[in-house]
Amino acid sequence: MKKLLVIGAGFLQTFVIKKAKEMGYTVITVDANPNAEGFAYADKYAIINIVDEQACLEYAKAEQIDGVLTAATDYGVLTASYIAQEMNLLGLKYSVAKMIKNKYQTRKCLFENNVDDTEQAYEVSENTNITELQAKLRYPVMVKPCDGSGSRGASRVDSADEFKIACELAMKASITGRATVETFIVGREYGAETLVIDGVPHVFAIMQKWMTEPPYYAELGHAIPNDLCAETEQKARRCVENAIKALGVNCGSVNMDMLITPQGNVHIIDIGARMGGNLIGSHIIKAGTGIDYMAAMICNAVGDPVDLTSKDKKAVATRLLAFNDGVITTMPDIKELEREYGVVIEHHMKLGDTVNEYHTNLDGCGYIVAIDNGVNGAIDKAEEVLCKIRNTIFE
Image (tube, rainbow, N blue to C red; front, side):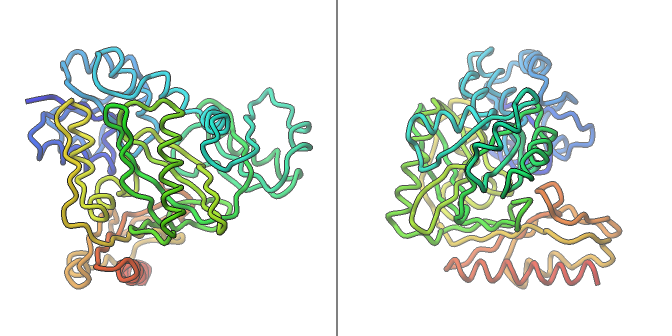
């Protein structure tokens, strides 16, 4: 029975932990939070900060693991890669993981290899001459942290007057205190999910996405199939494959966000060397493509044969349980909503909880997953259930 180490044991990692257990693997996990949800499902766990590479490596060696991965968080990528390198396990090259963690270095690599249609990219640190840089930029621009997860610290800047404050916000949200600046693209956001096996990228899907309004740009939901014409979708898939090759990704999951303009220009705006969050890996890809993504990812990590056979794919749409400020005064009957609408609701809401206005993924209370024969039906179903829950909890 092979041993799999999952870096991170939060809500979104529980799906991977449970899946690996179902598949017969011994599952070990680490997290700094002593109350991490995933601990309850693992065979063994340790309370270790997932960014502490050396401590996690020592634990992995002591447990004699056969494979390591992280999912749905950028913070575990370097650690998983480091352990794989030091223990000669399958995994992303550590040098590649370090580059992908830096959004500017990633953008620089994509630009130099003509991967997509993006122009204008800069890195900002405490040593940057902000006055000089803001004078030569072509506005609007997008400013965001060089590292981290989600949309924290990201904002659109329309003029030089706003630039310094945006940089300070982004650097504050960055682990390394740096920000990246790119041309702001007017287009629709899409997501791409890929698994790299033996150096070969398998692009599972280009997903529709719904986002909040500026300045936060947080995800509100996804859907498969997308609404792109065949030519644009193929171009997007080529950009994903070319990005993976240019960056030197040799193994594992890759999650990308991209903006696609009405003219069909493709701009990759973010890359994570791990399975996507917000139920992308655990629910959306499997439902929308028929491929058991998590099983494939787990087998890939431990060196077992990977099955990419598509079985019974449907249209799927998700919506985050994203609300305004408030207190949950009434809990909806989740099981009844699931039965009535044929949806899955994954949540962590409790009566009396204080809910923050939705600005980043951390403010969300869970997810609705709707499956239908057509994507519009799935989208409508998810929206209707979201409205019912919203009207119930703040009644």
